[in-house]
Amino acid sequence: MGTEVQADMNNGPVQETQTSGDIGGAPVIDLTGIEGPSRERIMREVSAACEEWGFFQVVNHGVDLAVMKRAKDASKEFFASPDEEKLKFAMKKNVHFHGYFNPDLMDKDVSKFSSTYEHLYYVFYPPLQEHKDRWPTIPEGFGPAMYEYVVESRGLVERILGLLSESLGVESHALFNGLKGPDVTQSNMNISFYNAKKEGEGEDQIALLGHTDPGAVTVVYSDEVVGLQVQKGDRWLDIEPTPNSLIVNLGDQLQIMSNGRFISGNHRVVEKSSKRRLSIINFYSPNMDAIIGPLDGLLSESNPPVYKSTPYRVYLDTFRQRARAQLLDTISSFKVLSLSDQEPSSESTIGTASTSSTIGT
Ligand SMILES: O=C(O)CCC(=O)C(=O)O
Ligand SMILES: [Fe+2]
Image (tube, rainbow, N blue to C red; front, side, top):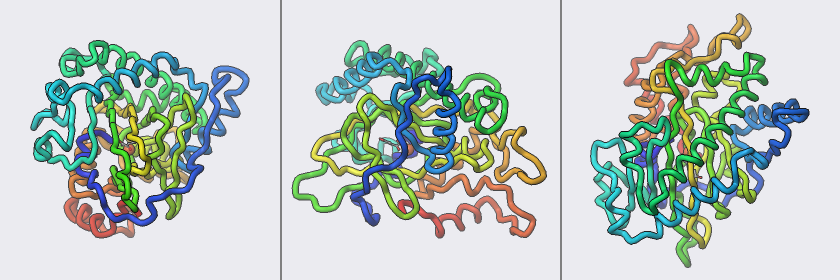
C-alpha cells in the first residue's frame, strides 16, 4: 500500500479493540543456503508462512547490511533536519502524494491527508529521471543510498518469488514474469517516522488501520521499535523486529496469482512505544499494465479460478477509491462470482462491502 492509500487510513485514536498485541506474530526464517542444499527446507518454510500468515521475517537474507544501514542513517538524518529544509520536499496537491508529509507542519488538506505521522513517499524503481528529480537531497546522499537499498531489497523479493513459484509447482520465473507484464515491476518507497506513545496515554494509538497491501510483496525494514501488528484470527500479534532482519508480507496480487493459496496478511501499525519508530517500506508492485490473475499452470477443473484477471492499474484504482471510504477489503470484489451469486453492479459491490467491511477487526 502506498502513502496515497494511507492518507485515508491514518485516523489516530480510532477505537479498535485490543491494541496491546501479543508477541510472536509470524515466523523468522533463515535464508542461509537458499541457492544450495537448504533450498527445499527454505521453500517449505516460506510457503507455509505465506499460506498461514502472509507474513514472515528473514535473516541472512543476502541484503547487504552496510547498504541497509546507509539507507536507515540517511532516513534518520532527513527526519532530523530543520523543518524548513524538509518542507522543500513537501507533497503537493495532485502529484500523487509523492514527497514529504508532516501533519504538524502541513495543511492536512494538501492531499486529503489525515496521517498522524511524518513520512516520505517516492517511486524509486524504475529510476526514471522524473522520479529521481523528486528524491530528497537532504542529506546529500539520500537518493543514492536509498536507491542502493531498493535494488538490494528487490533482489530479495525476486529470490522469494522464485521460491514461491517453485512451491506452487510452476516454472520458477512464473510469478516474476506475471508481475512484470509488458515491462518492469515497480518499487514505491514509504519511509515512515511514527510518533511515540505519549506519556500518560492509556490506550495505544492506532497510526495505520488494519489493511492488506494491494501490490505483490512488501519488504519492511523496521528499526527495533515495536509497532507493526499482524492479524491472526481475531487477535493482533506484534512483529518483534529481530536485529538485521527484514519483514516480508504478501500483497493482494500474490493471493490472486496463487489462486488463494497464499494470503495477503492483514496488518496495522500502533503507537505503543515511548520511542518513535522508523520503518523503510519497499512496495514491490506489478507493472501497471500487467494483467494479474491466477497463474495458468495452477488451474484445473478441480482448481477453477477464484479471482478475475485484471490490469493492475484497475485493481489499484479500485483499492484507492475504496481506501478513501475506509473500505479496506478490495480483493473480495475481484472474486469470480459463482453461478448462484447475483451479479451486483460495481457500485453496489462497493456499497455492500462497506457495510460488511472488517476494517481493524
Ligand atoms: O510501518 C510499517 O511497519 C508498515 C506500514 C504499512 O503497513 C504500510 O505502509 O502499508
Ligand atoms: Fe501495509
